[in-house]
Image 1 (tube, rainbow, N blue to C red):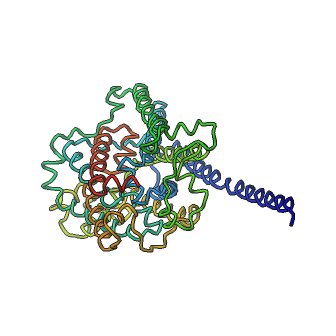
Image 2: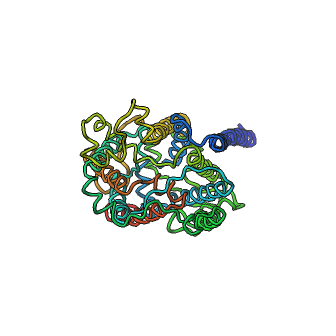
Image 3: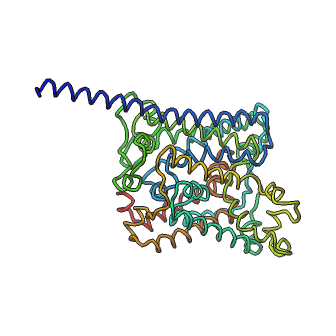
Length: 458
C-alpha cells in the first residue's frame, strides 16, 4: 500500500471517528434540555396548584435524583474531597442553584404568586451543635440524607449501611428529644426567621431587592471560585470563554475510571467541567435544579429530606400505645389519631415521596444515562482506602456510625442538606445560613483530620 493510500485511509477513519463524536456530542445536550423542560413544566404547574397531591412529589424527586447522579454527588469520595476544599464543585454548583432560586422565589412572591414558605426555626444551640455533629458524620460517611437514596438507586452497596445508620440516628433523636429539647431547642429559639422579609419589614418589593443582593453573591461564587486550589479561573468564567480547550485539570483519576468502567464518555466533561461547552451544559443542569427547587415550594412545601428518616424510624411508635404521651417528638411530628396511612403521611408531607423519586432518579440515570450502575458490588472510596485500608467491615462500620451522626445532627438542627443548606438558603432563612456555616467549617476541619492533606490532594 502506498503512503498516499494509507494517509487517505487514516484521514477517512479520523473523519468517521469525528462524525461519531459529533453524534455522541448531541446526547448530553438532549439530556440537559429534557431535564430543563421537565423542570419548567413543574414550574408552570406551580402557578395553578398550591397544595399539590402527595404523589406529585415523585416528579421533582426524579429530576433531582437524575441531576445528583449525573454529577455523581452520591459518591462519598467526591463529597469528602469537596468538603476538604480540594474540589470546590459543590460550592460553585450550589452557589448558583440557591442564587437563582432565591431570585425566582422572591420575584414571584413580589408578583403575588402564593408560596409555601418553610422557614425553619432559628434556635442557636440546637442548630450549632447539630451542625457540628452533622459535619463530623458527613466527613466520616460521605453521605447526606438525600444522597443516600440516590446512591442506593445507583447500586452502591455501602449506601444500605448509610440508610440503616441514618434510621437509627433519627430514631435515637426521637427517643431523647424530650430532655435534649430543654437545653438545645427551646432556649434562644427565635422561631422562623426570613432575612429578606425581616429586613424589608414584610414588604414583598423590598424582600426581592434583598434577595437580589444575596443572589448576586451566590452567583458570584459560581463565577469566580476556582475548582481547584492551584487554579485562578472559576466555573462561570469558562462559560464565557471563547477558547474551546481552556479549562481545568480533570478531577477524574484512573481509580474513578476503574470504579465506573462503563461510564459514557460524554459524561466525563459534565463531571470535569473543564471546557466552555461543559460549563454551558452544567449551567443548563443547574437551571433545571434551581427551577425544580422553586417549583417544589410553589406546589406544596419546601424541599427537605431528613424528616423521612424520622418518619420511617418512628413508624413502629405509631402503633405503640401512649407513645405520643411519653415521647414529645412523636406528639409533635405524628398525628395522635388517623384514619389510615395516607392521613399519617399528610402530616409528614411529601418528603418520603420525594425521596422515592430520588431513588428512582438515581436508578434511571445510573442505568440509562451515565451507565454508572454499580450493581451493589463491593467498593471502597479511594480516599478512604488510601488512609484506612481495604477492609469492608471497617468501612461499613464507619458509614453506619457516620450516617448515624448525620441524621442525629440533622434532626437536632431541624434539617440537613436540603432543608437548611438548599431550600433554607434559597428562601434566605437565617437558620439555613447558620447551619450551613457550622457544617462547612466542621467538615473542612474533620476531613483534614481524618484523611490528611497529602491524601486529599492526590
